[in-house]
Amino acid sequence: MNKDQVEKFLSNKCTYDECLEMASYFEKDTEALDALALFEELGEEKLNFSLEADKEKFLNDLFPTDQPAKRKPWIPYLSYVAVLFILLFSYLTFSPNSTLKFINESHTFSNYSSTNKLFYFPDSSYVLLAPQSVVNYADDYAEKRIVNQLSGKGIYSVRKNQSNAFRVVSKGIETKAIGTVFTVNELSENSIQIKLLEGKIVVEDVERAKTGQIFLDTDHSLLINPKTFSYTIEGKQKSSSGKHWKFDQEESEILGVLSTVEWSNSEVKFLKIENQELFHVIETVFGIAVIAKDDSILHGNFTGSLYRGDDIETLIGNFCQLNNCSFQMNENMIEITKN
Image (cartoon, rainbow, N blue to C red):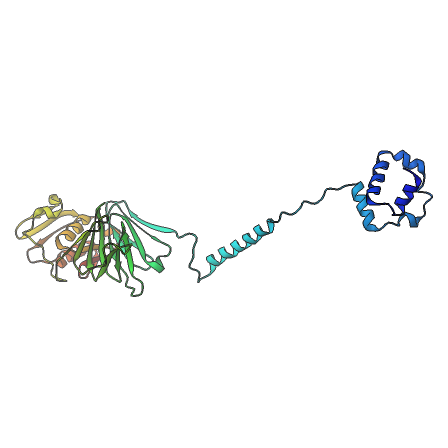
């Protein structure tokens, strides 16, 4: 390294590679640089002659620093996706007009007790579930009014809505009603009984491909196989009042409660029969649904008599006098309410 090269460097006349070579040389042998003693002889103008950009580049090469990490090109896209997701979630959650939901939560009514239990749906329709029965409905009930009967027997009383029918689905069989009372009873894996107590209903498989529409009138009963879709319909006409006890019917129809029932040709005596069993007898013998709207009505027992010529209203009237309740009788249903 000589004086001419140093002067060329300080005068900003050397090439970039020459600058690197010189810097490398003096970095390894600083004593050689001191021995030249050239810097004191150079004027201020020569020391600062090089352009600032060249000086900066030279310094960066002499004293390399950590370069900032390069930003990965896909990071901004992740940010955009996150923002869009938040906006979409906010719209679906807070917009009153949005119909799409990520989660359609279900609500379950189950009865694992030994007595019937009454449950109300959001529109005030209700179901009376027999023991060991389960139904559920989803958050979109107000829109679709669909109930899934998962097991057992349910008596449904439907709040009337002409523009939005009420539906019960059991093992792929759908019962559709506008405003009626009916029962859906899963007798076995291969047999479902659907009985209309009031009004009219339509029964059809959910795929709308197997059974066609099956229309039932009051007091008609449909027995359908959910696997083969074969079915039979039984119907009988009864008057809405004056339902009389048939004294000549078989005792086996009293459902095994003979220990609490005394039978004769003119009178039937109930001897401390449990209220739940009494309602069961009434439903079987008179072909009418009994709905207790308060669980306390199902507890306790009843002692009384039904004479030849008496009708069901007499029996229920006596029951309500003893249990401080009242009843309302429709065509094929009795609703009992605690006073």
